[in-house]
Image 1 (cartoon, helix red, strand yellow):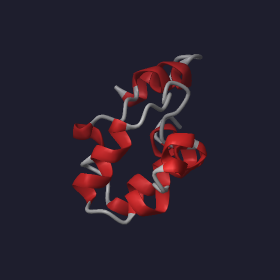
Image 2: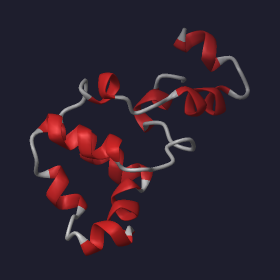
Image 3: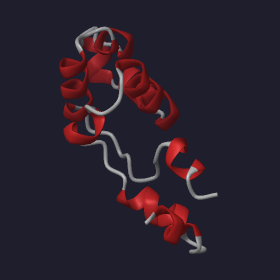
Image 4: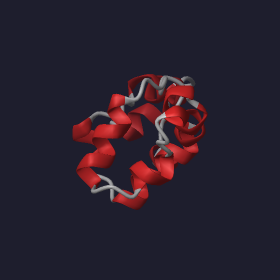
Length: 95
């Protein structure tokens, strides 16, 4: 399927629209990998800039230090727009 996608002019747009950080997807990454995805997507900045999180003294570094399962739950509980993001590793397979 990846090789077929590589032939499309809008492959990156299709993949980006289809990628969604669900629990099922995120559990396949290491904790460090999940943290990297969040930083690449700008999730960490959005999480830290959220007034509710500031008031509650929540920070990205604190949720990233939790167990992998709790880290994933915290990511999914935060309202973040992932619609313009997909991991760079996916696009490397299009070549």
